[in-house]
Length: 222
Image (tube, rainbow, N blue to C red; front, top):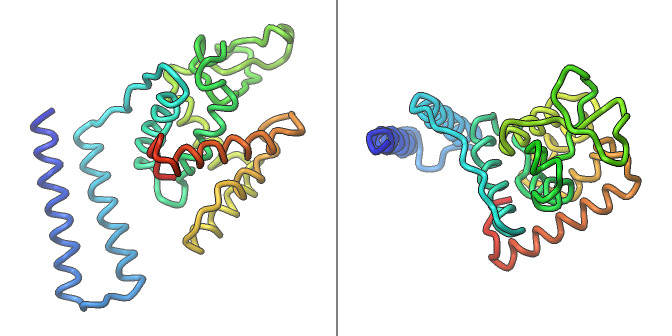
């Protein structure tokens, strides 16, 4: 592993050097599109090297609410790095939903099936956990290999399912404007749950997370 980090350090140094050289050779004040292209190419080079070095997903360890939040954030950062910038999901949103859906990783579905986001399946051939209140339902809570795997599924769900097209459209607008409003994004997720007050609860949870972050208790990047 030391050799891997040494290789990665060399690659990052080389990419940063190329980045600086591009500024010097081109112009001292490159235009927006040149800078954006350089940043994109830099990200692609580092990402390619990380895959080549076979980096693994982080362990998901927690003992309380704060460590659960940090574990989710660590996983989100890992997964977001592996997808293109336009498809990334804000960490605050995933933390808020997973905290709400799993009671900070303490729900039965989380403990028994690593399902921290309330993700359902209607496939009878798929392993699932039935609700004790509705054991004969046509659906069950999907079982995941790891909690990080559950987050990976959630990211793919929001990026591809037709029910969340409004979410994707708003995300693009926010990204183009250069400002992400997590609460506004949350308001587009009414289809995620049947609870009529779900969005209200989700927004309250987001505000709790943001307050913890503002007070430097959790240290997430957004």
